[in-house]
Structures are given as C-alpha cells and as structure tokens.
Length: 429
Image (cartoon, rainbow, N blue to C red; front, side):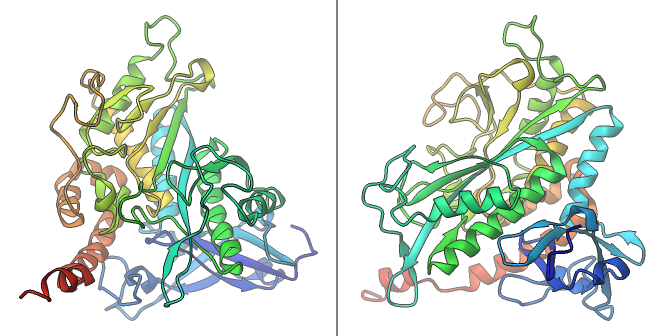
C-alpha cells in the first residue's frame, strides 16, 4: 500500500447497488476493521427502514465489520485519497446478504464444477442538467448521434475527463461513445475476472457520477429516465474457462461454433428468465423500459448476433466466444445482476437443459415465444419467490432480504398519486 495517501475511502456495495463506506486514515487499516450498522440492509432509497430478514432491525441494530485487503488499495479520483472495496462479516462469518458475498458464491459454485467465469459489463446512462425549477432535464447536446465521439456529443469534455480519470484510477475502460438517443452514452469496461471486474464497475459508476456532479450535471443509470427515448441497460457478457484454461463455450467442429455446454447455459437463462427478472430490473421504473417491441430483453429467447433477443451469441469465436445477457437495466446492482446471470446459466448445466431453437423472427413484433418478463415489479417479485431453485442457487437469505425491501417499495408506489393522474383527470372529474 502506498504511504502517500492521507486517507483511504473504504467501500462496500449494499443491496440497492450504492457504494457505502467511510474515510479512514491509512494507519487505521493495519489494526482495525471498519464497523457499520448491519441494519443499513433495512434501508430504502428514502431512508425508511423495513424489518427485512438479516437486517436485524428488531434485534438491536448490531454492527457488522468491513474487512479490506490493504494491498488492494488503489488511487482514487480524490486528491491524496486511496480507495478499496471490502467484504462484510457478522460475528466472524461472511455476511450472507452482502451482494459481494452473493457474487463470490456464484464464482465458487462454478469453480466447484471445474470452471472459472469471466465477465464484461456494458453500461448505458443519460446526462441530465438542471431545469431551473429544482428538477432535471436532458443535457443539451443538439449535435448528438449514435456512435458519436467528440464535441458534438460531449460539448464540455465531460467524458474526456471521465476517461482520463478512469485511467489514472486503474479502471480499465474499453470504450465510451454516445448511444442511440441523446444525451445517452455507452460506457464499457474491460472483460476479466468476476470480482475484480464488478468492483471496477461499482467504482467507475461512482467516479463518473461524482465528476458529473462537480459540473452541476447528473449522470443517471435509471432504466427509463426520459419518456419516449431509449432505456438504459446493463449488459452482462460472460464466458467460462475449463480446467485447462480453454474457453468452454467454443467448439471448432460445431457448425455454429458452440459447445453443448454453452447451449446448456443458454437453456438455464431461458428457463429462469421470468424468475430472475426482479434482480435485473429492480425498480418500478424498470418496467417502463422492459416492453415488447423494444430492444431490451423482454422475451425469453436467444439468437446468433441478434440484438433484439435477451441472450445474444455475438459473432466472435475461439477464445472470444461468449454470451451476452441483455435484460438488466442500468440501475441494477451489478453484483446481483452478474450473480443472477451466472447462477441461472449454471443451473442449465447442472440440470442438463436443452434450449429452444434460436430466434428467427425480428425480435420486435415477430418472436418465437410467448414467455416474457413480468409486467411490473410486484409480479417480478412473485416470480422470484416462485422460482425456488433459482432463489436457492442465488442465495436464499439475500433473496428474502431483497424481496422484503422491494415489497415495501412497491407499496409506496401504488399508494402514490402521480402528476399524470392529476393532470389527466383533475380538469374533468
């Protein structure tokens, strides 16, 4: 660990996908763990608390401990500050409702079968500016276009700064460009080992949002922040290496270049498409994005280099053979989303499943299936509860805690009177 840091930002991902933590002096890490109230796992976005399983709200609100590896401290985007992500423990045991633990479990479960997963994440996000009335409106980028770079899409150099800062912070950016709608951007980090890659995603999102905030802007990963424009996704790309370090998805002798093992993974993702939705689309807003006719992962289907299906098999083969899961939206917890995809795929292998035929329709108004994601968050939570095999593989403790928090979130939503209701009905009724 460098001794040049005046402080270290110790962080961990919570159930909402937020990076929680503290600033501590470097010497503190040699002798102490950092303690946090475990009941933070009872919190919603509005700071209300639900007695969710494992959060111990009604059991005295005790502490859990964050343990970090001092050798893993890296430079951050703040002056004289290092940053590190740690693991949570309760009474000496790993905290089962911690998202990082859930993802570690998914990796261990694959390793127990003789495989090592690799992942890469594609993020999408919108930039918003103050509207002058205390709210937000789309950032003014009138010259924006898809696959754009430079001043036409980034007039103030926001993403130039984000990319430069990422390099300085050892966050391996693969690409940044504008997306289909404006002011939307795609942000892709390099493919690699699972925990390291998802830790990088957590830090990258935090860094990018904080740089935008310093400019008076809001970088949002919400699934559907602007009505009438494209939603923002979080695509999980993954592959598996066998005990010899070879790509377990590639078969040079197969007509399509895929192994039976890869097909079983696809089958698992299709089988648990409905049950896993809540973890990949975790907000009420998520279901404004997940609609038929959009390129978002609505249908339980797969295809070869087909962007309008949920499980896409990109055209690369050999060591680059991988699957891309396209359902999750940008505000999904990246630890949960990745663990869900890995576990659903693993169940396909465990149960030797066979996938349906590849999609041959356009994936928009012509599809080969009638199975799709639930219509709202409440139905998605019901489906998650009903898919007991998937919930057990993912981690029952974490699923129970997640459902309790999200049930409360749904109840708040259905009790809320929206501006649309008042604007639409009040003048006449």
